[in-house]
Structure formats: C-alpha cells, structure tokens
Amino acid sequence: MNLVRAEVERLGARRFVQLMLVLLVLAFGVTASTTLAGSHQPTAAELTEARNQAAESRRQMDDVYRRCVDRVNGNLPPGSEQEYFPADCSEFDPARQDRLPVATDFLPGVFVFSQQAEPLLYFLIAFLALFGFLVGASYIGADLNSGGVVNLLLWRPRRMTVLGAKLGTLMGAVLGLSLLASLVYLATFWVIGQSAGLSGRLDGAFWAGLGAVHVRGLVLVLITTVLGFALATLGRHTSAALGTAAAYAVVWELGARLVMEIVDTAHPDRFMLSSHVGAWLSGRLEFWDASACASASGFCERVYALTWQPALAVLLGLTALLAVAAFGVFRRRDLN
Image 1 (cartoon, rainbow, N blue to C red):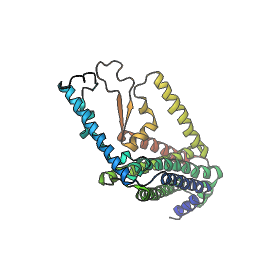
Image 2: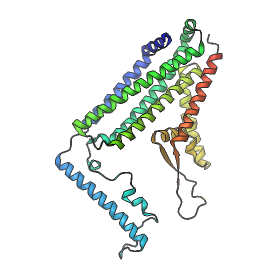
Image 3: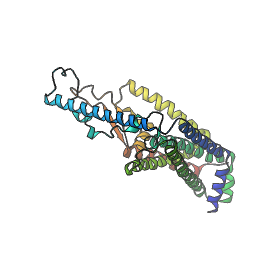
Image 4: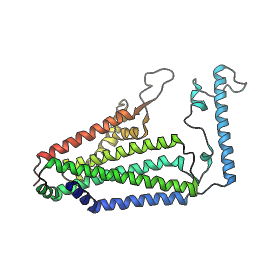
C-alpha cells in the first residue's frame, strides 16, 4: 500500500502529467464553448418547419420504396421504365432503416444532445487514448532514464513488484480520470442541450448505445496506456514509445497500405491496427473490397466487414505480448 501511495504521488507530481491535464481541460473548454456559441433554442416556427420537412422526407422514402416494388412486380406506370431500381427493394424499405428522418435532422444551428453525444464521446475517447499513451510512456520512461527506478529498488528490491505497482497505479489513475472526465463532459453537453438547444430523444436505446461506446472507449484508453508503458519500458526512454508509434504509422499504416493496394492484396484493412480500433469502438466496420468482383459475374457485394470480437482479440493480444516482454526485459536488465 505504501508503494502504491508513493507511485500515486510521483505520478501526480510530474509536470508532463499536469501539462496534459491542462490540455485536456482546454480542449474540453474550447469544444463546449464553441458548441454553446453555435447553438440556439429553436423557435416554434422552426420546429413546425422541421416537422414538415421530416414528414415530407419520410413520405418520399415511402414513395421510392413503393415505386421499386411496383417495378419488381411489373406495375410501373407508363413513362417510368427508365427509372433505375435495384433488384432487391429491401434497401429502400423504411421499416428496415436504422432510423427515419425526424424533426431534429432539419434544425441547422441547433445542438441536439441525442444526435451529437456519441460523436462528442468519440472525440473525448481519442484524446484520452492519446493522454494515456503519452503519460504511460513518460511515467516509466523518465524514471528509467533518470535513475528513479534504481532509487526505488533500493527501498523495495523486488523488480516485478515495483514495475507491477507502477503499471497498476498508472492504469487506475487513467481509468479514474477517464470516468470523471466522461461524466463532466457529457453532463456539460446535456446542460447545453437543455439551455441552448434540444435534448432530443433520450430513451433506453440511446443510453444503452452511448454506454456501450463509453465502455469500449475506456477499454481502448487502458490498452493505449499499457502500450505506451510497455514500449517505453522496452526502450528505456519515453522517446522509444513515441518513435515506435510514429514509425508504425508511417511505415505500416501508410507505406504498407500503399504497397498492398499496388499488389492488390485482398482485404488489406484487416492488417491495420487502425481498422481494429475502429471496429472495436463501433462494433462493426465495413470496408470497400476492390478485388471482390474481379472474377464475379452479375451482382457483386463489394464490401467486407470487421467485427469487434476479432478486433478486440488483436488489440488485447498485442498489448499482452508487449507487456509480458516489458516485464521480462525489466527483470533481467542492468539498470545502472
């Protein structure tokens, strides 16, 4: 317990951590103030017009679906034969759509919490993931480079215990901060929706979906935190983690992707960590498949999907591999 308390104090005293906290508050403040300045509560006339536009949009969807069904059944009126419709009309069926147009879709300049909460949460998750990676790398990297770990081992001469306490303290602190930041963040925008916009439809499905994104985001934040910590431990310096991340982005995400496209590699996105991150956060991602219809005749579905299960397995597997390697190297390394 004394070791954990000491690590919490050391983590909170680091200037880099304090700087990142300031940047987090600034980013939050800019986003909130910009949203507040660009929104207003709609007037009765704006609401009426928006409802009429939503009703008209739904009517047009019904009309398109009806004409498609008539074409399939051979009941199109004269002069409509040139209108194109796919063989399967289900994609036009309003009952099969994820959501139908509503009045809030036609209110420009009005912040609607139910529509904007999820994109705003994605923004916060991205910042917290970057925060966790940088803080995790600097936390252990600075200690290894300055000799702080050696001094700590003189007090508690158990390497695995010391490194485990550092990683556990780091993960607990980042998780606690992420939970607090998420609560304040979403509550602030909910207040903005109430006072300078609209709250929208906040039913059980909305909160369940937002909660799922939040949980997945917290898992991603912890993963990036451990990755930063592990890479800096392996490289004995903060810059090792930053250099590895930059090299991966340039060499693999950009360079290797380009090479795969040139040689027509099947499903190249499945080899990219960014694709797995997106699939984990959203639950499912679909990618354009340029090679799917190369030898097919007739109708061809040119997309393939990546779901959250294999994406999570890849992310956790990579994180566990690097963490185990970091602990193994730290156990045998000469720290002088």
